[in-house]
Amino acid sequence: MVASRQDAWTEDDDLVLAEVTLRHIREGGTQLAAFEEVGQRLGRTAAACGFRWNSCVRKRYDAAISIAKSQRQQLKKLGRIAAPEIEEVQAVSVPLKPPLTQTVGAVSAASDEEQQIESVIRMLVNQKDLLRRVKHLEQELEGKELKIKELTESLERAKKELEQVQDVGEDYRALVQIMDRARKLAILQEEDRSASKPIFKMDENGNLERVEK
Image (cartoon, rainbow, N blue to C red; front, side):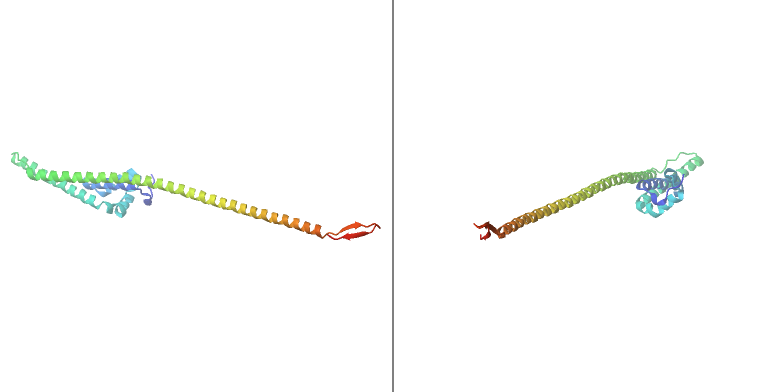
């Protein structure tokens, strides 16, 4: 499988990287083993996972790393306490009771650390769900913004068309007024020509004479 580009990491990928690495730290494993496991799960190289962890993800989980390291120390401490007790029993052949107070305290501390780690993991899961919801809301918002943009553009086009119709109406009214004035002017001119045209009549001798109006 071809390794994905480093800049193609998603929030889910970062969460997987954090969960696996914290588990390896808590259980005493190496970060290299964690990076190899993450690489197999995400189809990336261990080097790419290590680079992503050190350059971006690690600083977001400082508190969780500290808790995981503390729990690892508690587990190691429990291991060192149990081994000498077994050796002492074998050498002396007398059953010895373990230091109950110390053992109970260590177990209680380890249990508290385990609960804290589980709390951090739940927080990471909740964070992932929250990021998904935020992403979904962002997509809805983008869709609504696009719809608003389309409606705004449609409104602007309708306004321009209305302005054009209004301009045509005004031009038509102006043309009608011009034609009306031209018609009235033609009537007046015709009346003037009719008024200025001379009228003749024939007298008894057959001659034409002009009749004044």
